[in-house]
Image 1 (cartoon, rainbow, N blue to C red):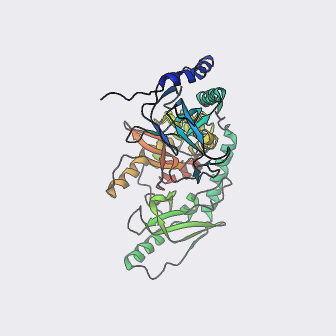
Image 2 (cartoon, helix red, strand yellow):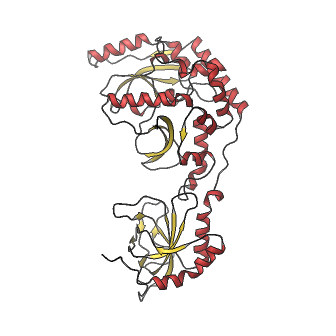
Image 3 (tube, helix red, strand yellow):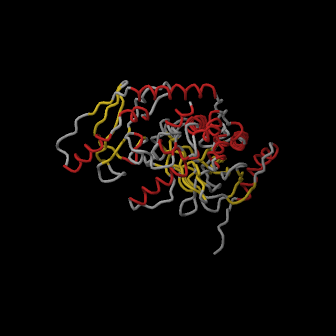
Length: 433
């Protein structure tokens, strides 16, 4: 079968000659050839289309420029995508046949950053421009965005961080010395086996340990937003069911029964009963020989030497998180979120205990196997924030060739790994500070 041919290739070469020359003068090497098929609200471009192609210097993206005939349907400034992004009104008809009698010749600029669909096409909204210089400026901005839009990573404040650790450790010890824990009554309408299990867990509750380990804010006070799920009595981690849970009310902890989805909780201690009962840890304390072994890594984290701290513990980082740690946006289309993501990444990874990540992932995999669910997929540690959509960017943990690896994942799931499995243990910090 013969390949499709662009009947207007010669005309397009001629119309794009000025853009090609200006880009070369700016140090950018465009290539003229067949374009990757794209589609957007205006429709799908023909597979035989030709034009200029510029590859991204530090990634897999590319920018394509061609020439089209366009006929405006509404006055300038009207139509297109609305400001809130909820509606779209066709403002022009775009024709790739340059002999269209009633069409004005315009440049069509398309940025490709997404994956291809089953037909090999890429979703890529197009932009139209009349002026050659506007096209050149758009390509130059995109081509150099990584350095031009780089953000400055947060500056470390090791002394302030050390003071915070000391303040929180002191608050934990004070709370444990005189704990205030209130137990709510459990409903009599529960099945007898659930009431028996709940009564057993309430009887095993160690108020001092619960008060010591409950999540804290930066001032050492109980974290108001925290919900700690202690033990579940329902159908499974991924379904809503009754959980013995703890919340804070000023300087008091309140224990009661709540309907929660266990897998979605930031603080789930059913696998860590020594945090809230007198039971001794079943794991090697802190996953370390002794407390002093953690200090070099914590010192690196306090100085925001995140990459060095992770490498010291054998933890790998994917390309996107490596770029964000250095302040670089991961793509042109997502560059507006770089500042939020970089700050969030530093704030959260400073709290981690990198040497615990492998064991933490093993716990997650054990739970997956027990629930007869497939394993090997990353589990979210925390979100990067800043996007109001169903699928959100998060930092995920899995293993690669046996080593723990952190990567940027996109997921609509609320499942996450409990903080107390991957963050620095409260009693370890108290031992050191």
